[in-house]
Length: 261
Image (cartoon, rainbow, N blue to C red; front, side):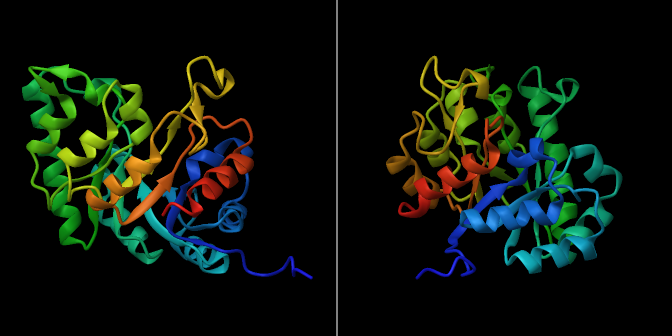
């Protein structure tokens, strides 16, 4: 007889971005328990989740997961970098990700994207001095052609590799009309975290804004997962921006990846 209380099998180095569960309004500790039960060995948090570091650390330990990284808004980082780094280190995390840029901060030409890259590089140096690594997470707007290259390429070239890494979001790369494997190869060695996100087939999952569970969409994971490893992925972070059933979606994605990672 199977003991339903047995510890679930966890997939090494697979994390769930907790943004995927936001519509459920679950307490933080419950989110962690659900992630662990689905097979994730880690989570990627969104800032502090309104909690102090002690409560986050306790919940993480109780769930038996790792905080592999955290999305923290640029203005929060610039306003209190020391506080952010202290919090993240206290919960066992040393990787912080700038997750998004408001329209007014997005580059309009090569020079403005480069200026943003230098700004992030300087912030990354300050993070490094505090024992934390800084990454940038893309959407689609950074992949628009600007002066013969993408804004993302200009941004990353303006910062040193050890100042600013990349958390490539493979679903957004595909939606922007680019080949995720090629972008991973272009930035190999600079991608310690990778967002595994799938894109639905044309006309499908309209109520999920065209996203799909990992393995149920159009991305070629047999090709992409080895490319992620070559690019330096230490953790694979599953995200679904608008899941119909967040818990079932997280479970299906984990099952799809269980034998592939």
